[in-house]
Length: 224
Image (cartoon, rainbow, N blue to C red; front, side, top):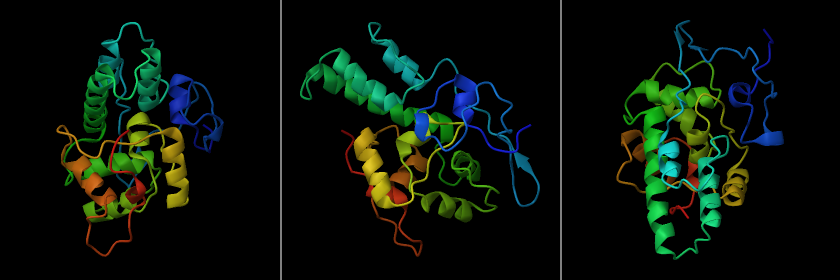
């Protein structure tokens, strides 16, 4: 088995949303290292890759049979492509209806992947895993601190379960990426569970503790 870590997303599907910018080698069908992660105490936790043939996105895009949904692409970029496919203007009622349904799907997909309980250390460990945080933190507070210290895009968390998510060097790098890729996560949604609400609360700077500001905080308040 190779000693380096390969791109899990490419190994499993033959595609990677980061393309040539991916920091891991693209090896199709490789014997990639196990997704099991060892904690400081030696125990191992395995997080199965949750992706199946049916996701919230396949259900959503399935309502538009004329559109050829590409699950290998970022779901949010596929939504923008859907808008172009139907020639929807920003104020088009059909676009507004589809937009709301897509935001619901995006939030529900996050819940399906990572869970809804902000006090469940396993949910934070799942996020730590895609951020390549190894070993996994032993306590809930340590896991939260590790995640919230990273400059990451929440849409990428949804796009890359079981793979890896890039942590940017600075807030400015993350801001440039978020704007350039148009990967804005909805700030409020009726389907948001406790874990997502916790993350979004941190994003918008309401945390009053002693930790340094999270890299999430640069995100815009509205999904566009």
